[in-house]
Length: 333
Image 1 (spheres, rainbow, N blue to C red):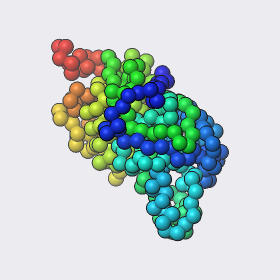
Image 2: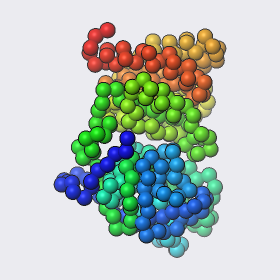
Image 3: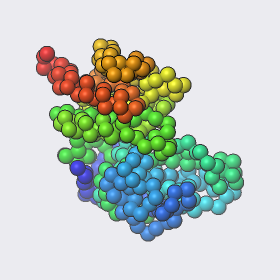
Image 4: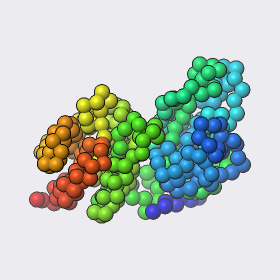
């Protein structure tokens, strides 16, 4: 359901809300090219900036970069305009790199963004890097998905939202059965491989009556994964977090370690039961190192990355979730 919020009529405590303005709106029809500045653009819910090549049903729908970050590169003697870093929205007066994943931003009168990624790996040396030996976008650019659409133009306000400002129908404020899905994959995060397992988990939970508050793709970075899990567990009243990927023997597979770092109570029986059930069909299921356990009132479960393993795991797991949720809420066995 698309979320709507009137950002101009709210009475706000400004001291607690970092805010700035939109310096420019930029768009390109092809990937790998600089973006052209446009007078105004339309942010489309769960898609991105209308007409932009990077828009789509994924986690990096809109890119943002602070004008202050661009100024650092200009100080090195290179002439740069808005859009040269392929950013959709250039901002002014807001310290974007310090905003954590999950932060929600109000843009203009209606649009609502949620930060999904900070920076990205630069895989091809861009023209800016070739000229000065550095590029600020991989470190200080941020990416977001569009939760609520609206027109955006230069001069519009952009500000961090407190949880109390979100609309009454915002499911992240709590619902009877709330969940989040986190896909852990370097290749999916870079856009080199489609994420099949995450969307399957989300749809399977919806079919079982769960509300999906968040669905993200994250690189295999152990500390960042732990941080994301902790933020979701501690701040969003989630009942369940399911991760997919990063459970194997690969050098970058760190889902179990990242999960153990934030758990307060383990649920080893659940993790072992998932492996045992998988081994009935696939002997190599024993190589999954997935963990499960509780942080506060949130159950966190690691699932493997392959779609087949996820399909089998969800068939085993979903029938157990209502009973687990009742126990977590103190409703007895």
